[in-house]
Image 1 (tube, rainbow, N blue to C red):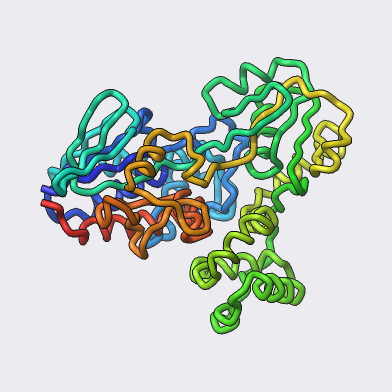
Image 2 (tube, rainbow, N blue to C red):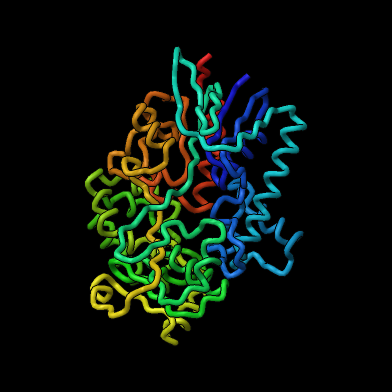
Amino acid sequence: MTRIAIIGFGFSGSMVAAHLVRSATSPCELYLIDPFLNPRGLAYSTPYDAHLLNVRAAGMSAFAEDATHFTRWLAQHHSQYTPQDFVPRRVYGDYLEAIWLETQEIAAQKKLSLKLVPTYAVACVKQDGAFAVMTERGDAIAVDRIVVATGNEVKPVNSAHPTLQTPWQEGALAQVASTAGPFLLIGTGLTAVDMVLALRAEGYKGQLAAYSRNGLLPQPHRDYGPAEALSATDIEANHTLRAWAGWLRRQASAASDWRAVVDGLRPFTQSAWARLRTRQQQLFFRRVASFWSIHRHRMAPQIAAQLDAEIAAGSLHVMNRAAYKAWQQTPTLAINCTGAELDVRRSANPLLRNLLAGGFIEPHANGVGVAVDAQHRVWGEGYPHVFSIGALMTGQLLESTAVPELRVQAHLIAEALWKSPSNK
């Protein structure tokens, strides 16, 4: 009997489990290791209705092979929303819970063994060709294959002010919302946008300021018609970051809306990324990633309108690094909104630190995430039995945090897991 451990149980881990169970044709033991065992994950556990999906409902099916799976569920359970709406993330969390319930029912029908392990995995060991996952509570779980789905890790910041490093901890924002301001948000990406909305939902009425190196907020979605039908030949012709940037600028200038070009590029992003040399990828992360992110990962129009109103009213001040240095106010509290730590060499996660020390993972050559093969199998002591999904794949794929990419990864990994050689 094949024994598989999935470490982490947010969207990525739960969807690998969903695909494994649905495609299973032979017995297996599936260990789901996570202290919370919540298929909503962090992103979809938000209690705030103001937190909306960054993609229209029509693009948010959890199954790439069934594009209308989410909108059918939505029509049945939340008929007030249409496929073109930006639905509250809390509602999407309900959808993921429904998938998990169905996954358990299918597992029972197939007589598959689902073993829930509500604790942290802290290490993996290999001895005589066999593997074991060690947990914080003292388990040593013997398995044949491992999926590392640990999700996003908060990148800590150094600040001269009292700082809330992990604002998503339960109750943290409710506790600070009654504090006198101003508050300083360190970062101006989607996490900072979430913080503005959450603090207002908690009743905070004081001043908010946000800063980053460039002081740029995510761009809003707009209706622009169909995405541009880009030429694969043109895309393959660009081998350097400079050539890519020039080509994209020309395409955007000729289009009715630059969003049509960015969205039209999506099917080619991973192959184009793979054509760049390591030094070009490193240069992208240092100099281009923040600009790419605000155009690629956009916010719902109604959220953009709320932030514009706050800026116009003077209740939200967005600064670049130079403006921040000249800022005259002293914040009561700084809130870390810098995003994820993607360099495993700097990880504070005991599991990743131990996997790195034990040779089970190695950093990607560009320094972001881990090194894997085309089937998401991680290079190292556990190859070919250890797989990775999600943020750890960013160095390999560039696009590896949004549902449209993660659902494809989950499907591919499930297929690879059944085909992977046994170490028995």
